[in-house]
Structures are given as structure tokens and as C-alpha cells.
Image (cartoon, rainbow, N blue to C red; front, side, top):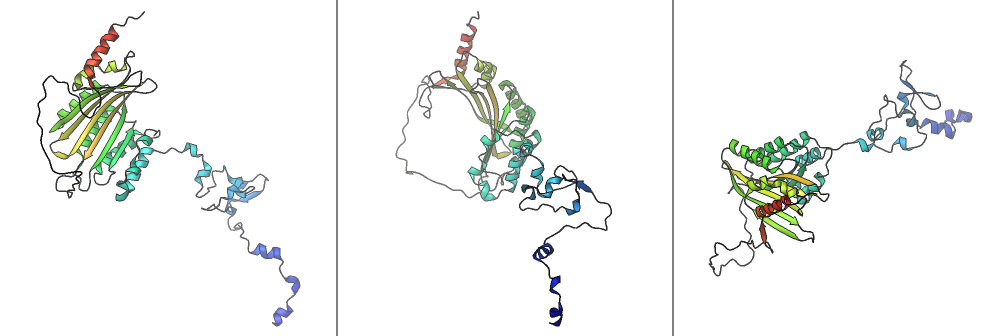
Length: 361
């Protein structure tokens, strides 16, 4: 107490001095003789050691007249956690195929069962920064993950070549093991310029190289949009003839005409796999022909692997069976179509004859 009483009040600290004591300061280390020095706008020399590194908080760069402003552009200064401030987001390229693959690899079982999470077909049509390597990596990862992939996945690819498409068909048919959990479908659409004849030759070559392969179904269809907006549908089983007459689809004298070939394959050693192959030659709104190849891999658990579930709708009893005969020459109209189905090859032959009779003046 005596010491306190004897203390000179003239030595008491003022408010400014007290505030100066509790304020964090960045002091220059006198032991270090050589330090990197940068010069600010006022020609004052500041040590880099005096600069506080920005953390994951409010950026000091947002404040005007901040000392950090003087260090922007200097390669020797690193702003932690603020790389986005050193470059524009416009220059960041995101590979959609690589991003989708990482999402599938990190997804939980519940996520894989949700259809809405994997509805990416329209999004994949807009991918611009993908590469051949990332698209092949995505396909290989999905084909190989039979029990850990989405129930239904449809992706559009634009970087793969004709040779890649043939390899994907072979992998989809031979590589997958039998699933043990659920049934899944992986549908791949590829942009191509390959004519139908060349595509069929590739399939023939693969059929000869894969033992036990067999085609279990196929159809060739066509849709024509008339000038009044109505639609005519066509059907044929002659795939080879359509390949020879494919150029007629682009005939300028015809109305908008789209042709499609659908084939299905399976292998004796892989009864749990069915691979569908489609070839589409369609007309875009701008008048250009747009060709795509679709490979669809359907894997189903073997009988007895998954407990069977049966759902019945309506009455189970069968009241009567009606037998009747159909004349051999009677036209065939599938009940699922409400109008007549025309023969595609016959229509193309007539259109080709009409085009030959046109005289150019």
C-alpha cells in the first residue's frame, strides 16, 4: 500500500497507450539481416514478415486502403485460402465426366437408388471440357461396378472414336460379373459420323471374335414428319438394305425422315447380361443430319441370387381362351399403334425413283 501511495500519478498510462498495448503488432526480427522487401505506393519499405496471412475469415482485401493491396501481383507473396482471388472463375475448366465418376465412387447405396440424382443425360450433352481419357475412365468405372452403380444412368459422350465404341461394346458384353443385389441399366450415347454400313461391319467383326455371341432381337424403324405436322411410321426387318439406302434419308425432296436400327446381343457364358445396340440417323431443326450410336447394358441377378418378389394387379383367374385364325395375306398392324405402319424399304425405293426422275434445269 505504501508503494502504491508513493507511486507518482504522472507515470499513469493514458487511454491511447493502453490501447496501444493490447493491439497486435507485427515487429521486424532484428536477428535476420536479409529480408525480402517490397515497396508500396507511398515508397515505404515493409517487410513481408509484417504481413498477416489471410485465413478463412473476412478477407482483408475487401477493405479499402488495406496493406495487403500493395502485395497483389507479387509472386513472392502467398495468400492462403484465397486462390480464387488470384484468378478468374472463367478460366476454371470442370471436366463433367471426371466429376460424375467421382460422385458415383463416393455415393452411398441410398444415393444410388435415387433416380433423380442420376438424371444427367441433358447435362452431359452440354459438357465441353471432357477428354477421351476421362470419358473412357467413366465408362470403365461404371461397367465394372455392377453392385455399386446407379439403377439407371444415361450419359452422352462426344470424344470417343469408332474404335473406342467397338471396345466399349465388347467390354459391356464380356466384362461384367453377375450382380448380387439389384438390376441396373447403363445407357451410353455416342456422337458419330460413321455410316450404318460401316457400323454393321464392325458388329460382324466383333461377332466373329466373341465366342458364343448371338443376336436375340432387332428392329428397323422410321419416322417421317409431314408438312401438315402429321407423323408416318415405318417398319422393316431388312437391316442390310437400309444400310445401302441410308443416303436416301438425306434426300432434299423428302419430308423430315429419321431412321433407327435396334439390335440386342447376349453371350452364352454371361446369361445375366443383355447389350442393346442402336444406330440413329436423325434430322436436326437446322436441317443437318445427326448420327448417334447407343450401347445399353442391362445386368440382372441370376435366379436364386435375390429373393423373388411378385406383384399382381387385377383378377388372377382366367375365364376363357379364344382361338381364331388369321389369313396369311392379312396386313399386320401392331395394336400399340393407332394408325397404319408402312414398309420402310418400299418407301425409300419409291422416294429414290422419284428423285431420279427429277430434271435439273
